[in-house]
Image (cartoon, rainbow, N blue to C red; front, side):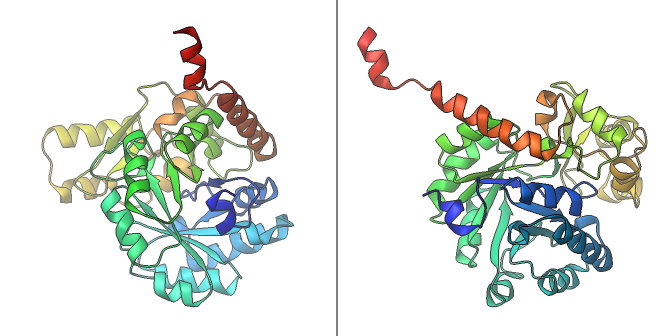
Length: 321
């Protein structure tokens, strides 16, 4: 049996990523209903807002056991967000943007399954040593905050699989069933998809942002702000400002001043496509529609089946030799 399905109470080994201003209670609930892990992204939420979205998610699904929370550890209210999640009965926690040692022990004592996001095989091993139940190995193609080493998913996953014994979930550049099949062939036990679920009816992203994602081309995103926290952005006026500063070798302080406060909310939630920070993965180039999650998940599974069916065994080549 698939290792991730042993670990999590889901039907299919797919995780809907917990994205800031995108992954609210409605999206998480729809994902849980579709048989995958529905994740509320706590990064953009105050503890009270997180509580609201968890209550909303639980009210909209018959499968609250399939709900999880992604908690980036770079924010000051991480401990409060964990407390809110535990009080809401959430038993699956994804941590990111920090040390896996920070909260894993307390979460395990509370009976949680803990997964940590990693961008290198070395950090993946630290996650295992810290007691994490699984790692989400995220390649350079991913949207939002990213690893500094720019290791692509195709290269990263086999290295992480070799480095650890716990299940490995592949993320970054996966947006359909074909990508899922590729990740499984590299040794992953599951996949996490972000940008593909951003462009769904249930995502809380602004309609302007969703429309821009499905209009994206192969060159529409770029990893920026490596002096601060690397983040993959859709190209817009804000991106051009960041690019101009970086080309002048601006300091970290100058980049932080440009970023200011609320840029991500302005772009992704409020729909200001010029001045807002718009986070999306390279996979945006193959996203061309805005389905419901109920429509999307079966499509991904059909694509996966078709991709596996089309694989040719070596014996078939040898027949022609």
